[in-house]
Image (cartoon, rainbow, N blue to C red; front, side, top):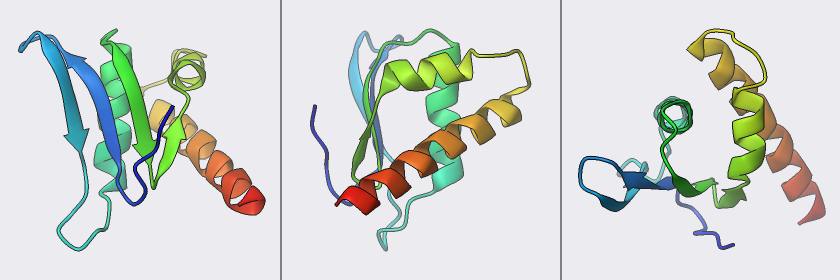
Length: 99
């Protein structure tokens, strides 16, 4: 496992290109477009794409844990994004507390 501090990204298998791709979502001033990142990750997992690793604000995300939360119930995509945000933000608080 690895992290890229200060970068928010998702590394996944691109079905169209047939190879791994990294989606780096950081605006020019270093601010991450959070909603775009959460939507990308949820969409990739829902489409059964192979996600290698995701990083949010420099913290590596456990893809298997995210997958289990996203498929926990059958609510709409917006609800899944809220569940994902809650998980990531709780992990961030725990990470920063222990840092």
